Image (cartoon, rainbow, N blue to C red):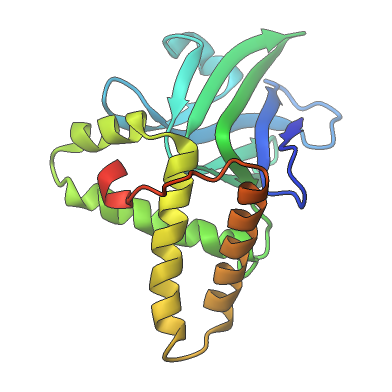
Length: 210
């Protein structure tokens, strides 16, 4: 179940509620487990949530880190998404494990087409976050603390500005359909969020945030 942002045209979603079952059930998407990046004890971790391991997860609220997440059904088929951070709440209802993701920035549910603009942008976001993480070297806890402190909407804006600037420099010398589609998608996101009054008045630098 998705919680749409009240923006038009639509840009991502505000939240996602997932019901995990321990055994197959007749549902449109029969979710079995959720895998996503989280920040726990000043450490970035890939957390896998499924009904059997809920008792092993301390607390029912976790901070989500920027990155891709995956929702798997009982056959192993995955639906991918991308988040710039937010909160994960864990609970139970009618014998199902309930995972609720919400964020101040749009959460993107990615298309299956690897050349779709949202997927291409997610690739760029992944690469940018990875480069910032590499700057910290062995001081992983420092990067995790920066990620924890970063507002998701500010992080989104900073990442988009950095990616757009890089791609525009490339496009100034040679055309590339994929890069052009990413820049167009970034323009769409920024314009929509500005019209909704959600785009930061001052866009921070990604180097200052992460």
